[in-house]
View 1 (tube, helix red, strand yellow):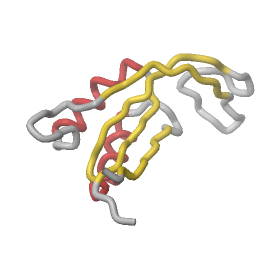
View 2: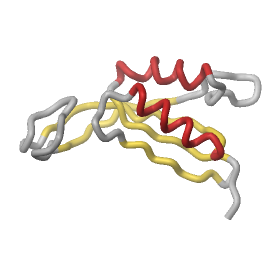
View 3: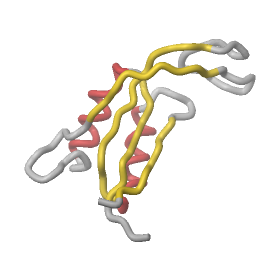
Length: 106
Protein backbone atom coordinates (compact mmCIF):
# COMPACT_ATOMS: atom_id res chain seq x y z
CA UNK A 1 0.00 0.00 0.00
CA UNK A 2 1.34 3.41 -0.96
CA UNK A 3 0.57 6.56 1.01
CA UNK A 4 2.01 10.06 1.16
CA UNK A 5 0.71 11.34 4.51
CA UNK A 6 0.48 10.04 8.06
CA UNK A 7 -1.43 11.20 11.11
CA UNK A 8 0.76 11.69 14.17
CA UNK A 9 -0.69 11.42 17.68
CA UNK A 10 1.42 12.44 20.68
CA UNK A 11 0.45 12.19 24.34
CA UNK A 12 2.02 14.97 26.42
CA UNK A 13 1.38 17.49 29.20
CA UNK A 14 -0.62 20.50 28.04
CA UNK A 15 2.16 22.96 28.89
CA UNK A 16 4.38 21.41 26.17
CA UNK A 17 1.88 21.73 23.29
CA UNK A 18 2.76 25.27 22.20
CA UNK A 19 6.53 24.66 22.25
CA UNK A 20 6.13 21.47 20.20
CA UNK A 21 3.69 23.19 17.83
CA UNK A 22 6.11 26.08 17.32
CA UNK A 23 9.11 23.82 16.61
CA UNK A 24 7.17 21.65 14.14
CA UNK A 25 5.78 24.74 12.42
CA UNK A 26 9.22 26.36 11.98
CA UNK A 27 10.31 23.46 9.73
CA UNK A 28 7.02 23.44 7.78
CA UNK A 29 5.53 20.26 9.21
CA UNK A 30 2.24 21.90 10.20
CA UNK A 31 1.49 23.59 6.87
CA UNK A 32 -1.64 22.47 5.02
CA UNK A 33 -2.36 24.40 1.83
CA UNK A 34 -2.38 28.12 2.66
CA UNK A 35 -2.43 27.55 6.46
CA UNK A 36 0.24 26.79 9.02
CA UNK A 37 0.15 25.79 12.70
CA UNK A 38 -2.49 23.20 11.73
CA UNK A 39 -2.79 20.98 14.80
CA UNK A 40 -5.49 19.88 17.19
CA UNK A 41 -5.46 18.50 20.71
CA UNK A 42 -7.85 17.04 23.20
CA UNK A 43 -7.73 16.38 26.93
CA UNK A 44 -7.16 12.74 27.85
CA UNK A 45 -7.20 10.90 31.18
CA UNK A 46 -4.87 7.99 31.74
CA UNK A 47 -3.20 5.54 34.09
CA UNK A 48 0.44 4.46 34.34
CA UNK A 49 2.76 2.75 36.82
CA UNK A 50 6.46 3.60 36.76
CA UNK A 51 8.48 0.38 37.03
CA UNK A 52 11.63 0.03 39.13
CA UNK A 53 14.08 1.08 36.37
CA UNK A 54 12.06 4.16 35.36
CA UNK A 55 12.75 7.83 35.89
CA UNK A 56 9.17 9.14 35.98
CA UNK A 57 8.24 12.68 34.94
CA UNK A 58 5.16 12.24 37.10
CA UNK A 59 4.14 9.51 39.53
CA UNK A 60 5.91 7.22 41.99
CA UNK A 61 7.78 4.03 41.14
CA UNK A 62 5.66 0.95 41.79
CA UNK A 63 2.40 2.86 42.29
CA UNK A 64 -0.42 3.20 39.77
CA UNK A 65 -0.91 6.85 38.90
CA UNK A 66 -3.85 8.65 37.31
CA UNK A 67 -3.74 11.98 35.56
CA UNK A 68 -4.66 14.25 32.72
CA UNK A 69 -2.58 14.84 29.62
CA UNK A 70 -3.30 15.90 26.05
CA UNK A 71 -3.38 14.09 22.74
CA UNK A 72 -1.90 16.34 20.06
CA UNK A 73 -2.73 15.37 16.46
CA UNK A 74 -1.46 16.57 13.09
CA UNK A 75 -0.84 15.42 9.54
CA UNK A 76 2.59 15.26 7.94
CA UNK A 77 4.37 13.71 4.98
CA UNK A 78 5.51 10.17 5.68
CA UNK A 79 8.98 10.91 4.28
CA UNK A 80 9.51 13.39 7.15
CA UNK A 81 8.40 11.14 10.01
CA UNK A 82 11.91 10.53 11.41
CA UNK A 83 12.50 14.28 11.57
CA UNK A 84 9.13 14.72 13.30
CA UNK A 85 9.89 12.02 15.88
CA UNK A 86 13.28 13.58 16.57
CA UNK A 87 11.70 17.01 17.20
CA UNK A 88 9.06 15.46 19.47
CA UNK A 89 11.68 13.59 21.51
CA UNK A 90 13.83 16.73 21.86
CA UNK A 91 10.93 18.60 23.54
CA UNK A 92 8.85 15.87 25.19
CA UNK A 93 9.35 15.55 28.97
CA UNK A 94 8.48 11.84 29.28
CA UNK A 95 11.16 9.17 29.44
CA UNK A 96 9.10 7.06 26.99
CA UNK A 97 6.87 9.35 24.88
CA UNK A 98 3.88 7.79 23.15
CA UNK A 99 4.07 8.66 19.45
CA UNK A 100 1.51 6.96 17.20
CA UNK A 101 1.96 7.16 13.43
CA UNK A 102 -1.03 6.11 11.31
CA UNK A 103 -1.04 5.95 7.51
CA UNK A 104 -3.64 8.14 5.79
CA UNK A 105 -5.33 6.78 2.70
CA UNK A 106 -6.79 10.11 1.64
